[in-house]
Image (cartoon, chains in turn cyan, blue):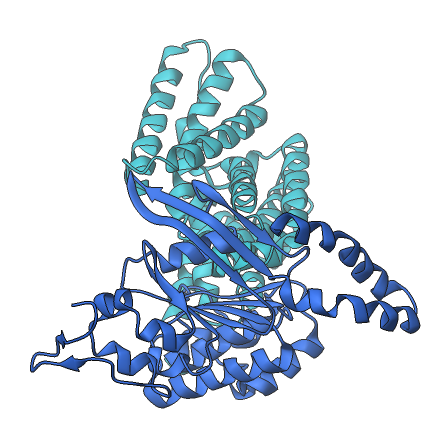
Length: 275
Length: 287
């Protein structure tokens, strides 16, 4: 069996899938931690759903799929930030409306275009094994960019997360950083479409950090451990997909959930807590 | 007159800048001239501040200034606009009208009223302190020693007590070597013994570092002996002045009830009125 796995590693599409998945996992550790700390997981979900509308419009207008996903994610993230300032509609209400209306409109738009055949299941659950060399360039470049920006602004992101006003008095501009964080989220969600699909994107962003929370004492520990858990989930999920012939995206998320459960039920003393 | 002061300021500011770059002799020669200016020029001054939320006036024509080495205390009932005023002074809120003047490159240490940290965020006290912008490790060590929280460094910040949390917040404010400390109810949630200790600490640090302090406090009996100026706020400034003046001011007594006079002037208390059985003032000049 080990031979069979080793042989898989010489196959192009497996290697591409592995690299793409690992890139996503490593960036999702720190980025997902912020999503957990700032309670933004519904925000991520909404962006992912709206990406489907982006794909549909991209197909109809005949624009490159990656580009249309990227543009729609960024446009919707900015739209959400702008609409979020309206206090007459609650945030969860707004997110629910946008998530489901964009998903529905996306599917309707897809139905209108009889010239293109779309595999809806692939969009909803990802198709990691069809990642091409071109896709891989997108994924690696975007991951590197997001990782670099997260690293550069790490302390400032953390400061506004802990106490926005205190950070502002110390000379940080919270509005600017919030916007940057949202755009980084949009970028990562755009590249994860292909890997885990619309429905599972946020799970890959929030399950590894939630699992890592149980064994972390500082924000940095949580972020790094989340990256490791995410990477292990990608590798184990791929292996599981090959052995049991299961769909890749859901397999990865299944493994990540397993990590979460194990760490969650660890004896309390080994979890964070005081020394 | 105020304008003239500003014009005077310009050459002195220039000299300050030179001071850090030129020789000691020059420093001493110029120091002589500007030392009086240092003491009189406020670190921060607010003039004619007005703000309303949804058409409801919250602050009306508020003036205040804080000088180096002086403690200014804001008192007033809940909803009087104290925290709003502090947020305006900090630049977190824009007033509808009025001006805030800060000394050039003034460093401010801010202690917010409350710190709620998400339980999902693992954070040790040390890591929290390191988040202070432009901190240097030497400064962190010396502040820790002063505030006596070294033993808490590796505790999770969600696990420490209310009193310990206030100390940690004070430490965070001090790490930036502030010239002006702004404290929003620093002793909130602290037990009585801890309150006295905390205010003593603030007082001691202010004296040592000669920084100005602007604070909101409800603990009148504890703050007043150290306070240089009290501003009694209730949308507008009801009265202000030295603690003993304010404690006898009818506007103050109106706001807080007659019992408060004993609070505020615990060291310089003179009876100028009598109380009836229910505690109302009888026989004072303004009744």
